[in-house]
Image (cartoon, rainbow, N blue to C red):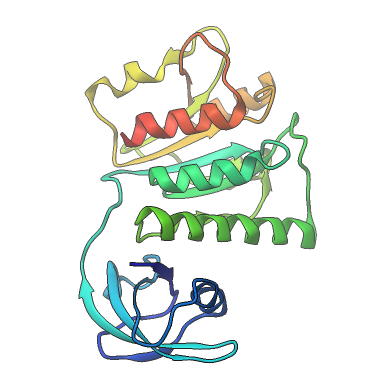
Length: 246
């Protein structure tokens, strides 16, 4: 059954108009009144978490009305929350990273501009790019069965993001992907399990500079490695997520 993101409170028996994006998707699929769909609100309303059956009741030229049916308290999210802070890779690779990170179950994504970043945006262009990535995350949730859409945070410089972090709590884990001498294998840290809340920081093409790594270490990030091979920026971030969420 097709799944659609509907970021509003949902309740059995309610009649509602689908948001514009979901309505367009229903029309593209050529669904008709009487057809069944699944709705989820992305975890924004805990009272209606999970997903709902729904039936299309009206198809207009640009609007679609549905009647909400049975609620299913199903969650397909990982048992731990992993937040990814990543130096944005160039071209369309960030789209791919957001999509696959969502499929893996990332809790949130923080796009960062670093010393070696190729992609540098600000103002309206940055806002539009973040909105695009958020839509990529929504589409990935619709496809993979996830009921909680990860938040894609506004772009920041690495320095500003580090400055805004709260003090590290004893139950949190902060990891920094690094090729520097002395970095320990991430797998070694995970031998005794993954903590409930983790943040993984990964650089863009070329990695973070020595100064950036030192600043991250001062904020409690432990340098780790994924192995002897040098991976592409997006591959490295997703490999780390797979290990942390697997």
